[in-house]
Length: 296
Image 1 (cartoon, rainbow, N blue to C red):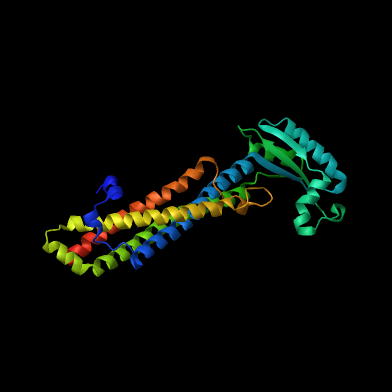
Image 2 (image 1 turned 90 degrees about the vertical axis):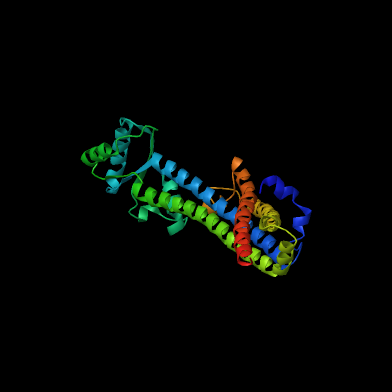
């Protein structure tokens, strides 16, 4: 049974399946609900992929050096560290954070009125590497030899768990879409079984007048496939509208503000009704062949 047969149909075969009723409403509602949830699962998966890439790139390009030294030695060791970084191949940029910047970093925990002089806060130096990178092990050894109070941190212990978590969220989104497709297949199969059982007497009469099982199954497949397609299309539209209402991505809002689609990704939800129709086509065909064989 091809796409042309599904779209154009067969008036004689269509009379086998009731045009309305509980099964029709069930298929449309289930397909719509699954498509609505699939849009958000897809958005979550794509956003998680973007987040993993962004976190990996940003943290991989930056490092931090802490100057843990007595206050009277901190300025000299900071200056020496900056001179070392200037002569280190692969370092694109390095600077010492000023007092206001360090206070802003600690404000979420200690409040905006924090007095840095009252706490043993180390001096922080931001290091941005070139795309080619630099020898982190060699820099760490050089700092240990020349600047005893310098502690080099390449963010590896922070980067790996964050990127791994984002990638797992990405995989979770993909698994969610597959589970929704499987749930819809189960729902369509149950509805098709119910419709076929309810029309057992009609099927028997059709067989008596010469109708083949292929003719009968085609009617159910077409009707259920179109119902799933229509319901999924409606759910997809509602889901995309809901995604549009989400706040855009921003650094202040973090991950939860970047769940929308970007660029050509807005075309991906259009595949959801097609997937729903394909699932309904396969599930209905399998159910029809099985039930018709039992009714023989």
